[in-house]
Structures are given as C-alpha cells and as structure tokens.
Length: 263
Length: 358
Image 1 (cartoon, rainbow over the protein chains, first blue to last red):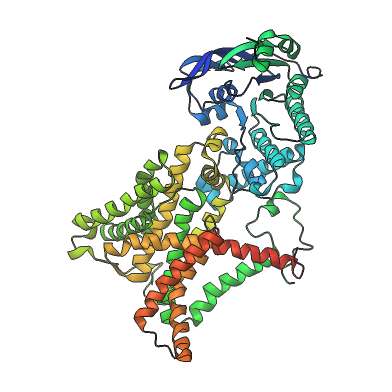
Image 2: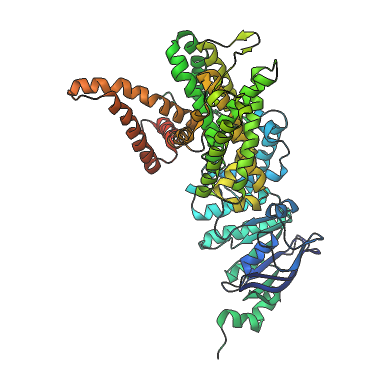
C-alpha cells in the first residue's frame, strides 16, 4: 500500500558491523543493515533484543565499540549527540521525553532551535532578526500543529495532556526539526486502537508528504506488516532476518525467536 | 468582571506572542510603572525609598538572576551572593582605576566580570546535577569572599576589606539623594527585567527550559548542553553582578565582603522559592515578600500583644520573623512549589470565569 506515490531511493543510512557492549552485556553484536531514502524501515524483535540501543547508536547517544554508521555519505562511530540532530536525524522516545514544564507550542518551537540564527543578545532586545525569526518559525510550527491536529491544545502545558496526545506532541517536536531521517521508538505503545490508527496515518502522511525516511521500532505486528517497506529483526543483539514484511513473516528464525523453539 | 478577554481577538502571531496579550494586563503594568516612576518618587518619604523600595528592587534583580539559572535552566546554585560581590567590587575597581568611566558602563563591565566568574564556577555543571551542583557552587561562595579579603588590590588595601562607594553622576546629575538612587535602581531593574522576559519567551529561554526538563531530549533535538548551561550561568551571574553593584552603590554605600555571605545567597534562594521558580514576576513577588515581611510583622505584632495583653519583646519579634520564614518555605514547598507567581496566575484564571466556578 505504501510505495506508490513516493519512490524509494538509494541507501542514505548504512549501519555496518555495529557492536555495542555495556561491560559484559552485549547489547548489539555485528549488526549491519541499510535504510533507503524515503522508505519506512521497521526494527522488530523480542524485549531486550537491542532495538532501542540501535536507535541510540544511530543518533549518537551511545557510541559503539565496533562498526560504523554512514549517514548521507558521512561515516562515523561516536559523535556528540546534538551533531546528529544537525545532520538531520530526528527522534522520538519510547518513554515520552517531552519538556513537561513547557506548553505544547513551546515544546514544538524548541524543535526549531537549530534553524535559529539570532544571538541571545538580539533575542533579549526582541528586535530585528530575532523577532522576524520567532514569527517565521511560529508559522512553520503552526503548520505542523495543523498537520497533527493538535490546535486545541497548543497553549496547554504538556504535563497535563493524556498519553496519546503527548506521543503526538513528541512527533510534532521531531517534525519541527524537518529531519531527513526520523527515528520513532515505539510510537504506538500503550495506545488504544483508534489512537494507533491515527498515529499510523500520521506516520504514513509524514513519509508521503514530506518524503521523510522513517526508522521505526514497534511491537504491534499488524502495524509493522502494514506500514513498513522492509523489516529488520533483532534477537539478543544479533540480526536474524532482514527483508520485506512477507519474507520476514515466513522466516523460520523469526518464528523461533518469537515463539521459542521446542527442545 | 473587569478581567474579561471577551472581544479581544489575536489575529496575528505577533499579537499572540506579546508579553501581555490581554488589554487589562497592559493597563495594569502601565499603572504599576506610572506608580513606580512618577508617584513614588514624588510622594515617597526618605525611609521608604532608601530602606525598603531600593533594596527590594535590588533583591528582585538578584532573585531574577538566580531564577534564570535555577528556575529556567534548572541548575541549582548557592553562589548568588558571591556573584553579587564580584559585581560590587568590580564596579569599585573600575570607578577607581579607570578615570572618567561612566557609572553605567562600570555597572555593565562589572556584570560582565561576574558573568566570567559565573562561567568558571558553572563548569562543574557539565558533569554534575542538582544537589551536588549546589555544593559545587558553594565553592564560589567561599572562594570569592576569600579572594576579596586576602587580595588587597581588590579592596585598594583598605583595612578589613571595607569599600566605600565613590560619588558618581549620570549626565551631570549627581546621584546622591534617596530619590535619585531609587529612580536609577528602578530604571536599571526595569530594563533588565524586560530583557529577561524577552529571553524567556525566545529560543534561549526555551533552550534553558528544555535542558531543565529533560536534558537528553534537549541534546537529541540539537541543543548543545555545554553551551546552554554555561550561557545560563553567564546571564544569571551578569544579573547578580549588576544587583551586587547596585547593592553597594545605590543602597549601602559602604560594604564589607562579609555582606555577601552565604546568608544572602540563601535569602535570595528563598525569594525565588516563595515567589515562584521559573517566573520573572515571581522574582519580584518573592523579593517583596521577604523585604516586607519583617516590616509588616513590626507593625502587626505590637497591636496584637497590646490587645491580648501578652508581652512580646523585640527579640521575640525578630525570632518570629525567622519562624514565619521557615514555616512559609515549608508551606510553599508542599502546597505550591511554583510560589506566589502561580497563585497570582490561578487567581487570574479564576477571575476570568468569575462568578462561575468552571
């Protein structure tokens, strides 16, 4: 259903032989895969398989001991976290990581921080460039607010919002960065059916309208099989399968990982 | 009934982003400014101007400085008085050693000196947070006072480190009377408060709050933690430095290093806790509260003791002050951690709906 209007291009993210260990715990062992431009790529696996660690490696929160990450032709292993954002990698978290003391509007505006050029002195006097930028970014943020249908809560502090809406605000904040690659860590966890359908629609719309490449971790197999173009399966830090949803569903190693093996 | 926003539409983002989008608020702040700039200088007596209003404004400025660091950027600091001391003693040296320097330039340079010291003592914040950071900033408190007392050059080799503020004038007008000192202090505090409000509603303020609320998420969306934290220390210390300079030049006149001891740091911390953490208005409310409370107690307690026939000595009144402080701080920490500013906001929200409860 997905790859109709947009064309999946060449790989923009290549993960090669990434290994990550915390002391004796091997979170990732020699994982390699690629993500093509404009595609929706799912990472699945049982609990503790290393999915979130993989996302943290991609956006620079964790530094792998081995392997390289190549994003848009630039290779690296470790980096300062905020540099990944500057390269165009956006991210949402499994446990909501919003700025709880701020309003929805301010949270999303924060996503525009890399695009603001005025210095703090200009902002303090609120004239010229600082004022112009603030208004221009407000306009852009309002577009995102419209897109995600959260107009009614824009002045509400995020701490007061229900869970489903908080997830949506977090997506909005990531979108405000206008990322080329968007990492979504369980965007539908803990949602009811209706909220899941909404979120799926938003993810697909983002992919289709903005052409954003999406890497997504999700436990709901129905969602994964429906919306993703290709799926990577991790188990105990190793990649056990990689391919289209149909191929992965039929893979014996995947079935064993999820259902267990008879002894 | 008067506080209604019905009929006031905001049709542009510029209108929506004003500091005071409501007409009633704009009228209110204009009235406060007229009162402060015109009525009080004309009508206020010397005691009120020099012993209550001027120190209130200076404490409000220092509280604002601490609020930028602790309330907005979430970095707990116990070094406020040290940064104030840097401002006071730096101003003294600039006026002493740079002949003909305008006093406002001296204040600004002193603020920058305090900002540099603030950055230096803010460096630990890159590795440690919360309670442990507060202890690290305590080092600023002890080191700065020690340096001022031990390095004779800073105090121009005065005995026991006491300095006396030089006479100064602005545009040829000597600032000597309580009225002129009050107006100077008020002008500086008003401008700096406006700048702080602008910062709070723009990208810098949002970056501070983002670091306060969730630092990992802040860095993931591209906010550099090191730069943001150090900027918060610099701006905060600048405000405290200017407050310290005013403390010496428009309030006390003669200061010793011990005037900037840990006690003062704590007083200012209490101001932002009672007034409201993360609020410009809260800094003023907290300062007003702590400056006015002893005076109010002095007025209120004697009539009560007369009426009830219980003898209350002066010593008890001054202890009563401490007890009321302690009680109120515990009260606010439990009941309303966002302080008087939050109560004010709740009051306004209730007023909008009055007479209906919802």
